[in-house]
Amino acid sequence: MQTLPYSALTNQHISHVYELYYTAFERLRKVPEVRTMNDNDKFCDVLKMCLKEHLSVIPRLAMGILEIQDSVSGDECDRFMTTLLRSRISRRVIAEQHLALTETFHSPWHFDGKKSHMSPDDEFVGEIFLKCNAKEIIEQCAKTASELTAKAYGPDVAIPKIVLQGHLDTTFPYIPSHLEYIIGELFRNSIQAVVEQEGSAKPPPIEVLVCEAAQHVIIRVSDQGGGIDRDILPYLWSFAKGPRRKKRLQNLGQVPQLAATMQELQLPPSDPDVVGATGEKFGSPLATLSSRPPDLRIGIGLPMSRIYAEYWAGSLELHSLEGYGCDAFLQISRLGNRNEVLSTRATMDAV
Image (cartoon, rainbow, N blue to C red; front, side, top):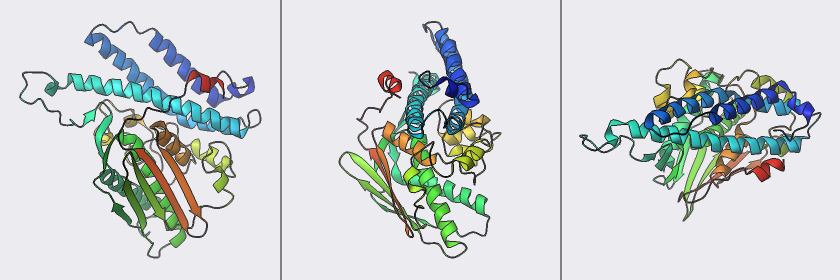
C-alpha cells in the first residue's frame, strides 16, 4: 500500500485499511514465543481479534479504489486490489487453519484413552475438507441462492430449477467456504438474470454440468438469462472500472463488513447457530456481521470469485451470448497437489 501515491493514501477508506494492517502487525509482533498450549491459546485469541477486525477490509478497499480514480488509473487499481486480496486470502487461510487445528487438538476425541478416537469431522484437516462433494456443495448453494432471490423479488416470482448432470459423485480436497462463495455467486447471477428476463413466466432451468478429468474438476453453469450487456462485458472482472461505478460505490457503503461467504447473506448476526452453519472450526467472525440485503448488488462477486479460484491454481471463465444466456466454467484441482498462487513481495512492489 505504501507504493500508492500520497493522495491515494489520504483517502479515508485506504487509510482505514492501512491502519488495520499496521495495528495487526504491531499486535502480532509483540506476541511472545509460543512455548506451551496456554501460550498458543493466547496467540489464538489475538488471531481471532485480528480476523474479526479485518472483516471491513474488502468493502472499504473496494470503496477506496473507486474514489481514487483521479490519482491512480483503473488498471493499476485492479492490479492493486487483486494483489492485496490474494495476500489477504493467504493470511486468513493460515490464521484460520491454525485456529482449526488448535480446536482439533483440544477436542476430547483427540487424546488416547477416550472411548472414541474418531473425529465427528474426520474428513477435515483443519479448514480443508478432504472429500468435498461437488453435488452436495452445488445443491446447498442452489438452495441458498434460490431463497435469496425469492426474498429479493417476492414470494410470487418463479424461481428457475437447477438441473445437475455429469459426474455427481466427484470428490476433491478444498476449503468449503471458498467453493460455496464461488458457486453461490454464479448461481445468484444466473437466477437473477433468468428471473428478470422471464418475469412471472415459467423460467427455463439452469443447467450445471460436473466433469471429472484426471487432474481437474470442471463445473459449468449454463443459464438462459439473456447474456451480459456489451457495455458491461469488458469490465466484468474489474473492481475499479465500468459504467456502474457510482452505483457500486453507493451499495458498498451499505456493507460495513464482508467476509466473502454465502452464510453472511442468509443468517442474521444474532443467530446462535451461525458458527455451526459455516463449517468453520472456531468462533466464527460471521456471527457479528451486519445483515446484508439479498438484493444488494455490490459488483465485486465475479472478480472476487476468480481470485478465490485462481488462489488454489484453478480458473474461472465466463462466456456470454447476448440475447440468450451465459456459460460459466469453474476449474478446480482434483488432486489437491497444486500450490497456492501467492502474492510475493516482488509482485506487491511491482503494483
